[in-house]
Image (cartoon, rainbow, N blue to C red; front, side, top):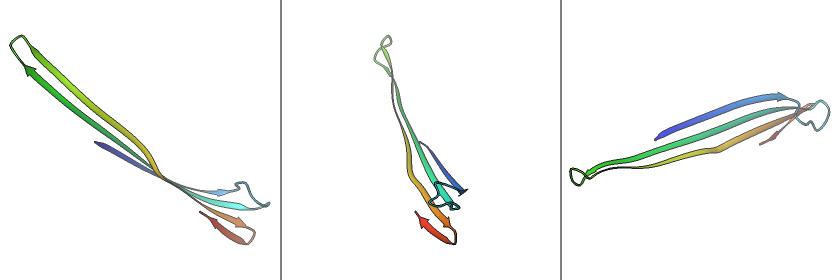
Length: 86
């Protein structure tokens, strides 16, 4: 089993579709990526007689990629007022 987890965080400040001229926005983005790999193998060697031999292999692999959490927090700065949108 192999497990990989990445977390990213970014904050941005500036104009983003302003409601009025001069409005600014502070945006915080957080994202979590979760990847999981399972590798299973079963190998067998069987000898029935001296001339009859079996080499058997069976494999099952599973890969799961998941992004369970993606958050954005927006703070809109208007002239003298700050509003929050989560």
